[in-house]
Length: 462
Image (cartoon, rainbow, N blue to C red; front, side):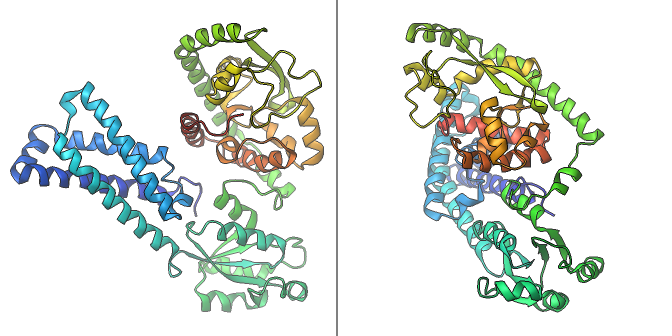
């Protein structure tokens, strides 16, 4: 069963591309230096180490340009463009490294040959993978039990991700569902009593149960027999959707999810460990960013009247309020009329404020909130009490995001654009709930790496 977005398929892709780039560099060395020269360079002059380091630079560049996002793989033109950009950035970084550490240089002639060779091999490899994942004969064969709105939602999630490795064979409904749904959903191929026959005939790998009101309709006996036989995997629709999308669908969320996702003793121990790690990181960040803090404080005083820091009440863990600390990026009288959401090209910001918001420098003082234990590095972004009260009335389960400490950054921040409306808050809540359920140090590391990438490319800030 696939447990996270960083699954075995992604790991295998990274390992395969390590081999492709490594092979391109080794091949370029043989073409440029000949057999004897290449063997001498590789064995006597630590050539394998140099090639490995250059390969690592390339893989890091692929990550920065989202080449391990399977949606990007679906667009071939975008894929080739990003490969060119990523390899160009990697070679520029290697040029600086070779200048600083000449002993690591693999040779200009080798580098010039390796660049087009690596690009050609990578394009061929990625196009082949794209064809393989999109081919109708490959991928896990899915049968959806249910034919109503929830079933259609699950199918839509899969169809919007053609490279996810799933193929929907059809829907199976109850007699009562078919009376109202067969015209709306023409891909209903059978009724639940025919499940065993459909599974055998269509060679089904996984059954996804996506039925709304299941009382009296769920084919419990048939599904139980199939599950005990071990010939097919059976999964609940909300769980399947969560794995595919990386968010918890509010349309499929039931109170039972909150009950069975309760934090046990092991989760509490993990939470304490993560809190310690985050505070250590905050201390390191505060020390390293001290020169930036001093320069920013001086510039804020020169740019506009008002205090250097901006203090604002936010809602933290278990609904407890705390004072969030930021560099002031707005005019002093920005909210005389009351709290409002930030908007694109917000005219309340100062000249310097636009810059420090875009670069996230205004968030640096929140290291202090992390050190005080009011926040973690990663978690749902804390909202103001005014908006929390409003959103809790409009959005079901909204207050469940306060089960854990808020964060400087979060899963919702890297997966969804900046929100400035109730609908945006609803969409982001689905990602926040996914993080609440699946929080771990590995997921935290993924979020922090993605956040660094967002900052480097200046995406999402307002």
